Image (cartoon, rainbow over all chains, first blue to last red; front, top):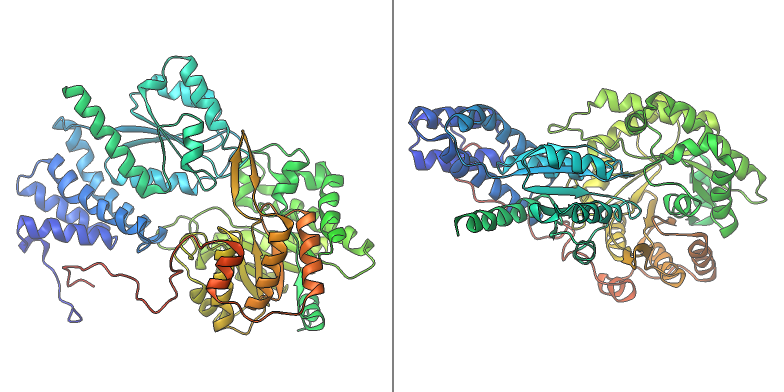
Length: 232
Length: 335
């Protein structure tokens, strides 16, 4: 495909344009994504359909290739940035049209730990997947998490730690949630370089997420289960 | 070749570097979340003790307690303006310890990453990064460091910014990256990519290599990738095994014997500066010293021999083989 030729987005059929958007997200093309979102809106698409069929699906492909070691952090950041270009247009419209929300997440690095790149990546990928994410930043004592959980409508709590010395603090947060009788109201996901599945089970978390792509998939699974329970 | 480290490599053939600073700091009571660099001023005896531990264990050089001593990291402790002061103090203490030793020991001024993302998708500009690195580098040199030591870098942009910052100070330097994602750095850089980057640099390092990452096997696979493609001195600084969570606390599962085996293999793979990273204590360094001094340099091992001696690799490939990186089939005519 060496002979490059310009693509006129507005000339593509709905189906072709959706596929083109997946490619454009993959290549981190922010302006093209924004243009395509506007074209689909102009054709009468519901904002929620654009979000799920074009953007979220495109980011799902990015997530898979990140997980499989085909894409790396720089490409994923560019894709997430392109996604933001689309979300900027869609966000107010989603609220207006009463579209179902995918889920709300609270995230933060635990007390004693000042590392944030991994957490920031998860935040971007979660937002890329259509979740609302509130980021508490670094070095959070248990009070920060509880206060924010109680004041908002959260489905998921995400905790991050990069140090072997700080990861045990995740258990303090979970134990306090149990004490307060609020543990079962949330899905608790944990991540960070020195963690593993075994550790996550030992401290009573719901899931260990090896990387940002796994975090997104895990969150989606939990939200699907939650929706099913609400219907049943 | 005028710098002391290049001379030392030429004279001795190989150099034993140091082990873990962080692990030692926590053992001495550093509380998680507190910046270790404050101790250069507040607890100098403890920092000297850590340096002395490396010297007594037989290290030819040790790294200063300045890994996070850049304004971007110190900002998290409202101390961005102390980058120069804390860097200089780290090197001053190192100089004292090194000068008291009867044999020659070099002080390597540690420069860690900014923790920010650079490049097209990032938010830290090249110019800001260069000036941050310059401040840290100047402090370390003014404190008496013999060589500067950039470590745990994952992006080529940041490696280049560090080089430029150091060039303004005019010091000799070493720079290692951390290959922790299926044989690549977090940003996707392979061992071969790093060789090519270093080769083309205007102000290149006197030695380059790998530190931290996953296990010792992975690190040596990376070193093999370096030595196949470069004649420049290579650094191997691997972790003492892998952190395990046992009954509420963490320990690294690499014994001194394992690290001795690792050191011999690292030299055989082509590394001439050999040390440890997280979890590597003086007992490990002693075992490494003894093994390296007591044995001739072995033949370059195969990947199979490495995994038999030190454990399986964390991923099948490290991205440098002949198999092309799988490409997504695009519809597009854009690219």
